Length: 261
Image 1: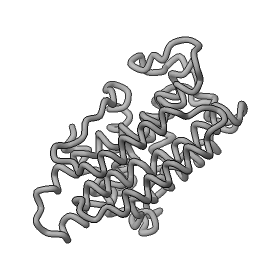
Image 2 (image 1 turned 120 degrees about the vertical axis):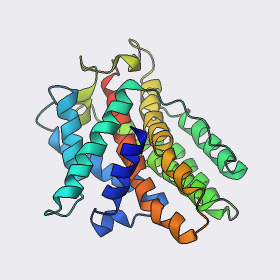
Image 3 (image 1 turned 180 degrees about the vertical axis):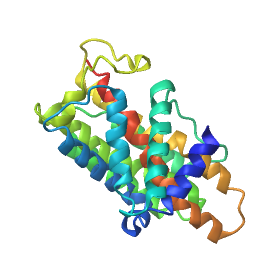
Image 4 (image 1 turned 180 degrees about the horizontal axis):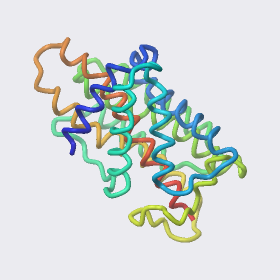
């Protein structure tokens, strides 16, 4: 299944509109935000009846990044989205760094996780400011493998945008359309977040699902390309990695959000 998803995402990444295809790693969170803004607009006046409907809504949004007459691209968007939802529903997101991951990037990512864990109702600006400082530190590292740096910058870019999103949904806006997903009866049983407790823990879980799912499931793209000795070959897979990160992040955080009591 992983090979099928990998090939689908690579094919999709080279087919989508140039504006989306030419994202920088540190901007991949903006694609995540754009997709969630479309989803929020869709759910202003309705709630998905079940997880299948939610999956199709996300697939429609991802297919929207294809050219209007590119049916192959749209088919790949649906196939990849469905596989990503299946992964998010049935598997966890415990993450371990790949072998030989750059120590400086690992240190920065550990700082990112520590910062995310502090999120609460009144410290959003401080958390975002710290994440942006960590982003700057990552950019200054000049001896990391290009794909490892891509992975790290993608992760923290998603973390920044995900933090803004889920903080708004669960702290700042009781009428936010995505609150309609909360506590749905079809939430995945593997994401049983319990009853009651600190909403900050649930917000943190949604953010971590975004980051870890994208990081973990798109890691195959890195592994497949790390053996390449051609810089041109390495650069060519970066769009696929960025798209893959977003594909897996969005279903993961949606499913966790639906499991919040």
